[in-house]
Image (cartoon, rainbow, N blue to C red; front, side, top):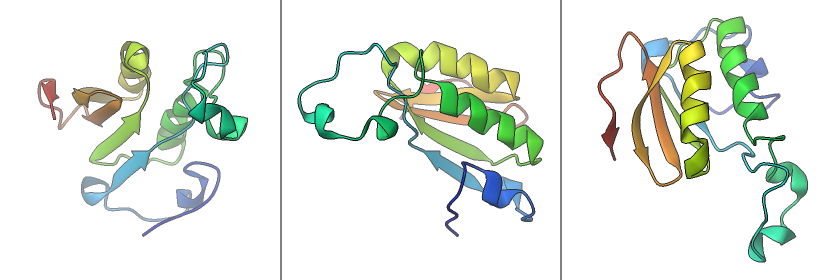
Length: 120
């Protein structure tokens, strides 16, 4: 199923089979002060920038996972490589572990299911 809304808010009253539930999140992740290349300058700011460090919406998403008692078996995200460590710390605070990474893509799994970090 596909849902549209304020991040995970549409799932507030939905029953999910967490083990077979995945989140693919390509949220705006560029820090406000980051210098964009020419092609990205044509995109709406709202679609690119994610706060001072670029991770504001990812913080909100992980908080909503707790708020709505959602624990997907996998979360795929996109962020800049220098953000991977900070995004991993955010995920860890919400019981998720970074299990795979490749370029701009990260895979997180619940701590109870997580395996050691690997590449895609």
